[in-house]
Length: 143
Image (cartoon, rainbow, N blue to C red; front, side, top):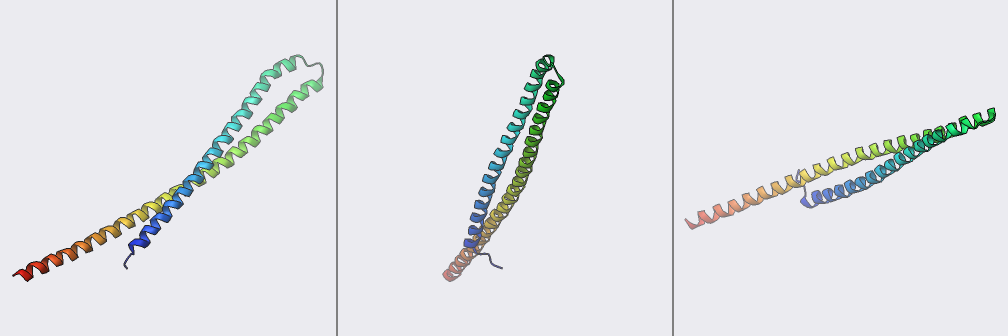
């Protein structure tokens, strides 16, 4: 089966665009993952800051309600950390999926580039054969 050079180059160009689109998608997913990680760290820092303040609040507590409010507020911070952790896990999974897609697109592009190389080598071989025949014909005519 003869591969048409123009079709093979068009295939390579399409695969370059697909790889570039996958790279852009991966960049967006990675940025989102980094943002969710920062949000998770901020939530954890907020809990630590509150727990540092909680010692003063507990020392100044005059009734059971004041003590339970510290536990309630700590629970709220822990829920926010759990939500941020969940969002980060989802963003990490999306980034891993986009990385897989990028690897697949890059692999397909390498295959297309090898195909272009093979077609150009085959074309060069056929041109060399034609040129050799022409040279052989010219040398036999001179005799």
